[in-house]
Image (cartoon, rainbow over all chains, first blue to last red):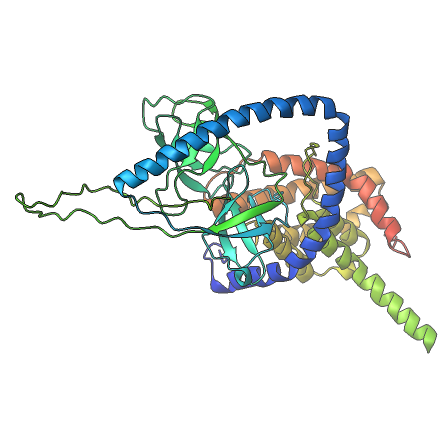
Length: 275
Length: 171
């Protein structure tokens, strides 16, 4: 009951223990990672021929995608200028290392070795190279706890597939979170891409989450892009929601000013700094 | 005088050794193993060590210590606060009160008793976590971890028995 009430004393105890444990875990996990990397290197060495062929094919595919991406980037910039769309603020990042395992049976969360001292705040989003990892739920001086998207308490508003069907990505403490609250008669398919929608104000829109792996009547299973067993480094990003002015209810009919439509939930802006 | 100091140091080391092993195992379980080689669900080595030391060195692990170990486990694993603390305390009570049953029994009986304690503890922690989350959690991972913990008991108990310099006290 004390834990559920999230009393300040419980939070402080967690934070103090994590502050003490994280530097030790950080040190101890490095030899473990060295051994794991050594095993992985040996396995790669055994399959180097096949890996080379696969990488050549992937490189050709990525070169094609690069061309498409550059074309879209140019088109995007033209459209932004046309619409006089204000540029989004740059995001600030902190890179951190995961120092605790996700082996808890009742929670899917990890500890990272960055805390308040490094500029991390509660509710910051956490990203890996392939997509969203989760968000910060607890911050101490030297460490932070990340709630993974696969955790039972994780709920993320998303768009699914090319039709951008709205749903909620709900963790269930397994490796395959579920899509819930799908609209009735919705048509989503295995392989549809899932991205954050930006609703709710925690995650900015457009961040990759995973692919639909199985579908059922009113829900679907998801294969996250991120391999939570293997990630080591994550980026903790901070962003702020930007408000867009809403329409005045009593705009004059003979006014020259265009009437802005009520846009509903406030969309968020987020941009990666261009390397 | 020197011999007295040595004996006191030896006694102190023997007294804290069981708690130290449990503490080390709790922290070790939190260390991530990042590999694409599939692993079985990790056994609950702290619970295994707790059972072992309560059986052979009950004077070294009071109930308060078991509670503290459980809390530490909860904090490092991100589990609901108190779930493992209560589990470890109940396991402590079960082993402490039933310890005499194992006097003079074969290893198989001890192993069976360990299996009962593990299944009971995992059922309790699973139930508490389900109550905490307000939903029935999938018991699959709990069952898998309980089975892996039971399976590694013989090897790990042998290791613990031979780690302590003077070996476990006989029942």
